[in-house]
Amino acid sequence: MTLRVLGVDPGLTRCGIGVVDVERNRQATMVAYGVVGTSPEDTLDQRLLVIALAIDEWLDRHEPHVLAVERVFSQLNVSTVMGVAQASGVVIAAAARRGIPVALHTPSEVKAAVTGSGTSNKDAVTKLVTKILAP
Image (cartoon, rainbow, N blue to C red; front, top):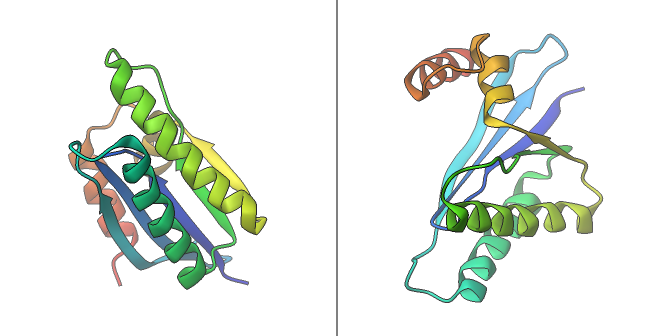
């Protein structure tokens, strides 16, 4: 059976979304990806609504078996942490309404899974993800 995973890199300004299918042999195939953007000039409730509606659409269209969400981690910028946490909550609640399990992963865990090192830079992660998902 193919496992469909919808991954989310939450944020208020840019919320990254990707869907991959993973076969039993761990071969992964990219299904779709995109970014939901909101304007800092909009009110918080409107920004969260935009993210909520987009996540609902992605969940309905792609019917994932599980959601993978980047776990909020400590940063110096409290307002950034709050925005990520709020966007994460909207995403997690959307999955819960559908009975879809949610796995939370720190950026270091994701980097280590992809590259073997939790301290890899974005370029290294991008190169390996591109190679893993190449047709």
